[in-house]
Every structure is written in C-alpha cells, then in structure tokens.
Image (cartoon, rainbow, N blue to C red; front, side, top):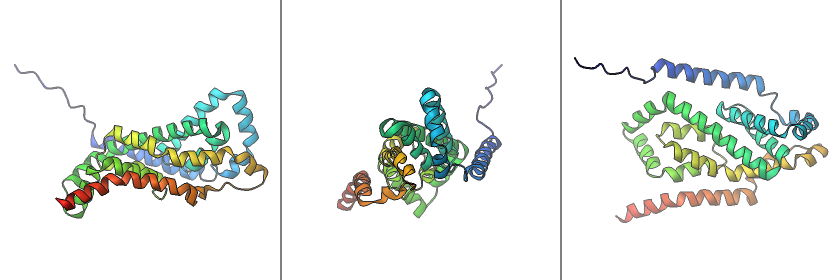
Amino acid sequence: MTEMSPPSRKSAPWARYIVLALVLAVAIAGYVALKDVLTFETLRDNRETLLSFRDDNIVLIVIGFFLAYVAVVAFSLPGASLATLTGGFLFGTVFGSVLNVAAATMGATAIFLAARWGLGDRLGARLENSEGVVKHIKDGIDENQWSMLFILRLVPAVPFFLANLIPAFLEVPLHRYVISTFIGIIPGTVVYTSVGAGLGGVFDAGETPNLGIIFEPHVIGPILGLAALSALPIVIKALRKEKE
C-alpha cells in the first residue's frame, strides 16, 4: 500500500488576494484618516508634549516611534517625510538617523514581502516569459541588480513606495533588497533627519522646514555622485559588450 503524499502547503490564490486587499484597505483608510493629522503643524503644536513624554519615557517613545515608522512605510501611509523629521527632532541627527534607517528598511521589507507573496512571483514569471522590449528591460535589470537597486534608492526623484514595489516584481533576492535599501537610503535619511534635529529653531522662528534641501547642489551633488558610481558597472558591461 503506497503512502499518501502530504497535502500541499501552498496558500490558495484567494488567500493572497485577501491579504493584498487588506493591505490596500489599510493603506487607503490610513491615507484618509491621517493625511490631515500627520502634518508639520501637528508636530509644531505638540512639540512640548512630545519632548516632555520623551524625557519621561525614553524607552517607550523609542519603541513607539520605531513601530509607527515601520507601519507608515509598510502601508505606504502619508507622513514618511514627517516621520523622518520627527526622528531627528526627538532623538538628534545620529540616533535619529539610526532609528529612521532601521525602521524604513523594516517597513520597506514588509511591503516587499507582501507584494512578492501576493503578485510578485506570478508577475515575475510572466515578465521572464515575455518577449521584445519588456524582456530586454527585465534582462538588463537582472544582469545589474545591485547597481539598479542602489540607483532606485539614491535618486530622490524615484518615489519611495515605487522603489519598494518594483524589486518585488523582478525576482530580486531578499538579501539584496534589504542590503541595498539599508545602505541606499542612508544619505537622504541623514539629510532629512538633520533638518528635523534643527526644528526647534524653525519652530521658534515661525518658519517651515526646507524639505527641498535635498535638491540643493551641495546636497544632491554627492548623492548623484553615488548614484553614478552605482551605475558604473552597467557602463563597464555595456562597453565590454560593444568590444566583443
């Protein structure tokens, strides 16, 4: 008598769609509920309360801030930039940057895994079996994954949520995604965190923070330089192919 094979543990397709629908529902509800709450004005009006609570409950506020930041990124909620500023305002440039980078990486990893589990494997297989321009684009990204991942993170013009989702649909290994996210977001995060660390003076002057600072020449120049350095392997490969 032959043994019966164990039932497959693969999740049913409908289960994936339910999870994706829940994530989307939370994202939409969060956007509607928080878009007018997570603002610079809210931070300004509650700064004394936040600072007092931080001084009395440092461990609790660190944990709470970290989890809130993870949720903002994981569900693509409004307020990611404000969260980064808040990290600098509450914890200073150095510790605030550490918290911001770690939380953003964890949140980005969560949405990457959710997208891949829900649709990424199927879409990736379709792209792999496609033909023409789409196939060439995917092959180009596959051949230069590290470079492309760092470029996605370093170029400020690429929306953060797109940089989180695109790799999930291109069969990028998890470890590459996590490493490139963690390292790639450091420059921009440090810039915004340092702006947040100086919010006390901004509040006192009755002004608003300059979030466009990242596009100023002395800031964007070095970041684009890193992006160009990340693109160097792609250029070298292209030149080698031309010589062959």
